[in-house]
Image (tube, rainbow, N blue to C red; front, side):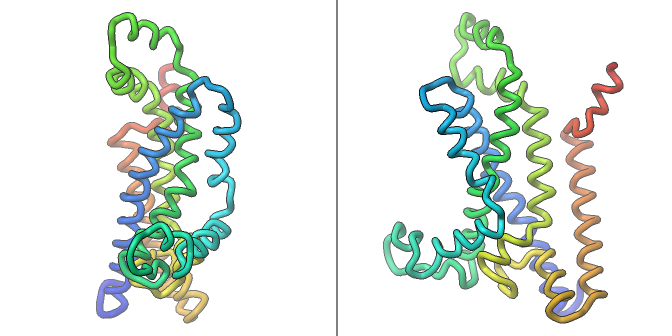
Length: 238
């Protein structure tokens, strides 16, 4: 796994997996929180806006990958929006990596928005009224009241998305395809070794290593950031 050409490919896949997780989840957090704030506001047509925001999350990932593959093809919509020469989004290299990040962000940012919206709805309006009477600006209210109060829901959403992105398979596989240095993930590598080449030992080693990696990330996330995933603290307080 760590030597020669096999090691180079595995380390590349591990790096892609980590990079996808950091960049995609970071974008999803920002966009998801903005979505939640929009969905939480009272305005005419709010139900329609909520439904339209949640549509991408309801689309199966494999279908979303094929949809974005059509968008990113040489004569697709993406190249119509970008000036200059057509970009080979689904070939390899940085454009392919960026295409996966865009598609994953579009697909799963509504999930974070949905969980944050649930956290926003349990915040009492009296808190915001008190802040308004004290002269707090909207920005100060967001950083000092909204964000701390939705932190438990946000941390759980981020943890779920991190664990999901670390084992990402179907989106890069359907959007870009296997065997691409820029988008190969550990799960794609394990699938190829098992199904395409019949190397079940190598595939098992990749899978076990990914399991240990995911378990370590989850443990560190829960311990350092204090994400109350199973309600342990509430149980102790009771």
